[in-house]
Image 1 (spheres, rainbow, N blue to C red):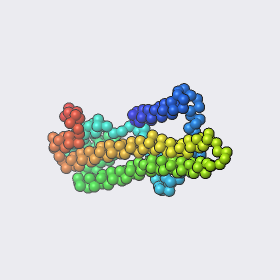
Image 2: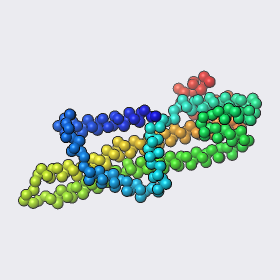
Image 3: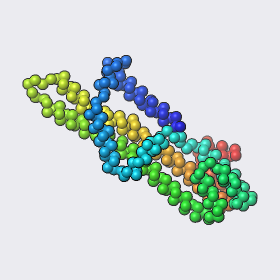
Image 4: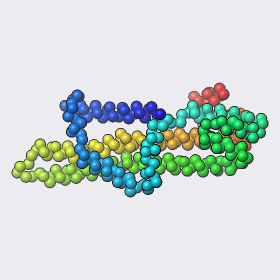
Length: 268
């Protein structure tokens, strides 16, 4: 589970509640939440955003919404995982140079990573390095497209929430201004109407900047990390299929690592 994402959501929620609470006569105040709840404004923002998102994407793209959102809490690929994979590929590459590519079949079968296991199995099956690269790059491109679509769903929600918030505010202002000018104009009702009109803008901004935009950026970050991990795996498998010497493999792997992480690979 991605602990930083959970901490981030909690920090955002606490900050918003604190600011809102102090804005309404200071904390603690049991009425401040009541002043922020307006069903009509919520329907305008969330309902409008949902409708616009459904127009933008197909049923198949929207169908995985819950699964995509769940990826926010999934752990992100870290450099340690890449280093461990590089060490394993160096071990397999050394054995392949010593005993031939078929000698590593048992090592391949023990791997937990399905992508790496499939990639190495292509090498064990005798596929040439160019064919292996083309096959795996095609799969990686398809995966990247899926990830991009998932992130774009939340990016679209992030875009439409403030828009429908502004629409709701404009409707509220029109209604408020339409009631002005009468002999019995109630200033209390007028200021209350102004507050209600601005509430939809607040909803749109909060949902966009505190939920949908962070989720979108989180998914993009995790997708980039996974793509990098798999690109390293592809490079390693291609080198094994080409019978590249382990020292050359190690030097190539180091080019993927930050200087502070290269010593960890050298320790293998």
